[in-house]
Image 1 (cartoon, rainbow, N blue to C red):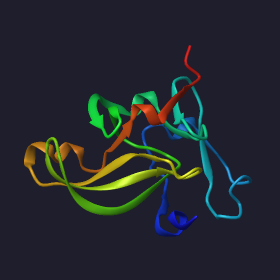
Image 2: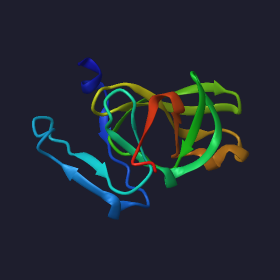
Image 3: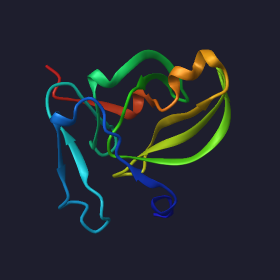
Image 4: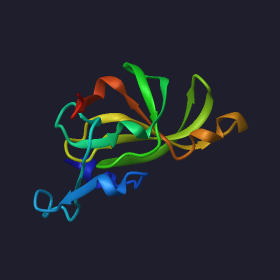
Length: 140
C-alpha cells in the first residue's frame, strides 16, 4: 500500500521493555519486527489485534478524538507516524502527526510533535489513541 512507503515504522520504547517480545518471522519481508506485549491489560488494534500499549501507558482518559473518547498515552509500539502538520485543536494550535497501525494501516489517532502554548508542553512526544480503535487483551 502507498501509505507504507510514506510512513516510517516507529517502535517507541516505554517503561515496559521487560514485558515485550518480538516476532520477526511475520514481518521478515518488510525488515521490521512486530512487538508483543506480555502481561495483563494490553490494548490492541481493533482491526487486526496487533499489540499497541500496556494499560499503564495511559496518562489521561479525558481526551477526545474524531470518533469520541480518546486516551493520552506515553508510548505505543507497532505504529507508523505520518507527516507533521499544524492543527487547531480544542486546546489550541499544535503540530501533530497521524498515527497508524503498522500491521493494517488503520488510523489510530495522532502524536503531538509541538505545542505552541506553554501550558500544553506536557503533550509533546505523547500519543492520542481513540478508544473505538482499541480492543482489550488479557483483561480479567
